[in-house]
Image (cartoon, rainbow, N blue to C red):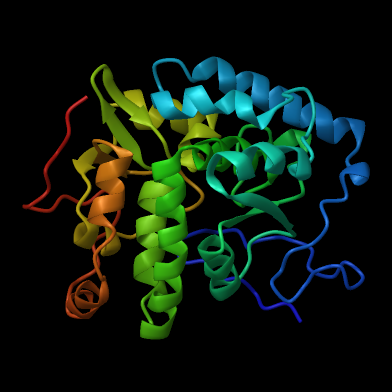
Length: 286
């Protein structure tokens, strides 16, 4: 039944995920969380990750994320998705669903369009504490879920899912995946007190958080949808380019128009390698 998920970013490692769970994985790739299967070591890994990342957030994470993080609940063990759903549904109408790993595009977009966020239910091994290529339960819960309590960001995520289904019909999923990567996963936001991270890939990684916000090495530029969709990315190294927004309202507004003309334009454009400079880039200083 399982279809291998598409991975567009460059990587030297294949994705992992167990899709053969004795018939428990549905046609939409959702499955029971099976909270009882987590070992004490699993819960300890989550606790250690949560403790480390939460200490790094002040001065590096955006205000909206810091304010919403306590809504995840307990930090000492892997939460039950149903417990989070009670709070999340009341706040923005979203709910979490468990999945065995990366899932194909159409099921992923369909879930988002229905305000259902797919959360990988397995957790990394202790020796992978510092870095993991494929999202696990810590990345998805800690990195993505807090901002689903923000009404504007939550609406943007649903709109992205609906737009993804349209992009699939137009053969433009790779271009839209780049937008997801550089915003929802690795986006930066400009606040009155400086640049801050809102992307889940940054917020759930100790090294990437410092690199994205404080390092002089990567380039940071104002978000331009066409530029973003034409830029490649790597999934197993720190990013060389970051795109910056001023607010979630701005993100919602600039991604709201019909992307069909952009997809047509992108077919005739050269792909820009991550880290490369373009004459029209509006660079954002530290």
